Length: 497
Image (cartoon, rainbow, N blue to C red):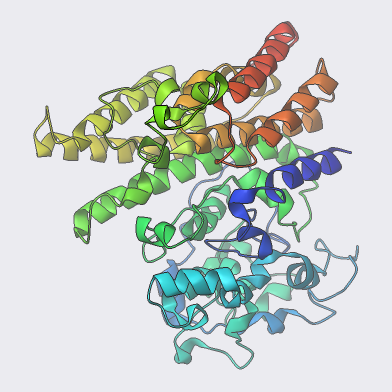
């Protein structure tokens, strides 16, 4: 029932959203159907753990690409390996991972979508002759490689394949099926550790939020490419997963919450790193406008030219925004920060305050007034350092019934600030509440007023169908309802934090 409920909500959000019509046709990587989220963990060593620290044995991606061959998805397709059409039970994997990926996972359609009409129009706007042959597109929509790293079964048309997430298989394909395969040394063979939640999130974020060489810039968005969005827990369930959940109860407990929190922390850290990196290189306009809130500029201002209602006025962004600074300035679009700051406050109230202070100083520094450039550089550096620190903390934090309930109350109570930020912040808040709710039900059982809470979350999903039709006033009203429901029953969560 839980999985059916989650999938129903995801369908509400994804399939019927006008703003991602292009996505629903099958894009992965950086465009399409934005619901991917996670990397395969069907191999034996891919059960989860609470300690999500960096695996020092894993090679840097560029080094792995330099050293090893990519063998192609077909090398995993044997029926005795990962190509069974039905799940099996003799091993710790279902052995149907390739089948799920090739038949049900939109990653496999990453290349195909480049041949579709919408992609062709985007390419035309960018003066790209053929998107299916352009490295700018293939870098996330497929596995574009130099010929000397292409194995015999390599096929670029396979889209986002096994090795995009798991690493080049030349050295580990044979050894990884042996009983004595040492997962701790897998990295030295080129295998990427998707067991580690931080590394898993980082891998997803390379395309789903952007990274060096894989940026969805303001130019690309202007040409028609959808804005990127990411939330690892909900997108994992929509993928669909081609791996088995961990059998260890301790590893499974609050896993969805840990995945969500790590994903938010990693997404925020990723954005700050990209800002720092692009500032150092000095290539093009800094910062690229894709980093900022679209609706800080793209909103209707002159309402006297339109006979709009009072309800329409109430939903205009410029009317309900709480400006933390002067209007018209650049406002960082960081939907992960909008909800992650609640996690930061849970981890450490003092560091939560530091995060707020640094974000405010960052925005003030963007105007170029009131502080010398060196001061702005210090702010960015400290923000980057704090984002790294908080990511490490959240990856090892032990969530409980009390802390999860507390997060749901604080996020739902932040309704006005969320809507005053931007649509994507509201979107991330809904995904957060859904993830936390499902994790709570899985770990504890039905919560008080469970039916009403579930119906309210479903209602919130409907309200974030489209940025174009998003009603800030309706969203706030529903969030207030959620907050009231949760606060009313808060007394029962008196367990240890």
